[in-house]
Amino acid sequence: MSNTENSSTLKSYLDQGMGMAQRAVGSLTGDASTKSQGHQTEQTGKAENEASHTAAKLGPVTADPATGATAADHPKRTDGSWDQTLGAAKESLGNLVGNESLRRAGQEQNAAGKQQEAEGQLQDWGQGVKGRVEGGVGKVAAAATGDESKEAAWRDVHDEGKARQRGAEVDIQRKA
Image (cartoon, rainbow, N blue to C red; front, side, top):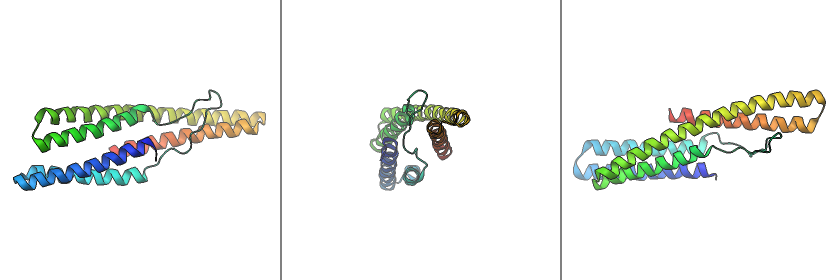
């Protein structure tokens, strides 16, 4: 399981647990808004868990024949996802214990994580488009010279770019 899968699965479990805890506190205190918010958080966690197991993930990492660079999710995506997880946990814990500053800090960290993840998704999408174009052009040039090994390498660049672009699109649509 990749690091991204681990963090999104962990976040889904944390959200489900925090949602259950919020619902319990809402039931005990008679606060319908806390109970409703807990239900919503729990449902979000269940949806995140399902999405983390069905979303398109990048296939095997391939090297760019021109530069030798390899592709993986942009670090901002995983860092942002982790910040969202921690922020949501802080926010829920702050709600649970009635600590307003912890709740606010969690909200701020969650919002910053969403921004950071979105930036990473956008960069991955752009790199995916670039890889598709470079791979397509390189494949045509290699085919024109009759070099089958370079043609195959450029096809891999194209396919990696397509996987990166589609993976970012899936994540963006899931978050929308």
